[in-house]
Length: 141
Image (cartoon, rainbow, N blue to C red; front, top):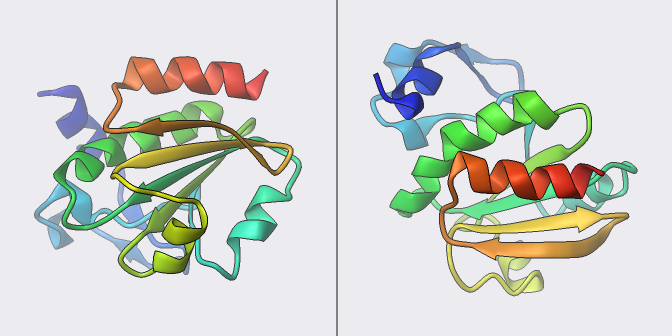
């Protein structure tokens, strides 16, 4: 079993409102809803997430973006590794175009990393687990 498929099979899905779904509910990895460790951001809550005093990684994605879907299990795994040090956030650009415009997001996926509430780095395109882990290690120190 590939690492991605193994990650997808590990645990039930939990939405931010606490609703729990079984794996069978969804047929595609991009159907995953965010667990409590990855926040769903909107124009209304992103500034609060950025002001919590910890570094933040924001993943701008869309349902129609295949590379974005490939990042879901990687982000979930990294959120478990770095969850005490870094806040993980996803922004669905289809529902939050204002945030995509505000942060000048031109391609998907785009990862914007924040330290002390200010943009620290920006990555575009899908990244490997190893690549993102290295960036998060630097961000968290």
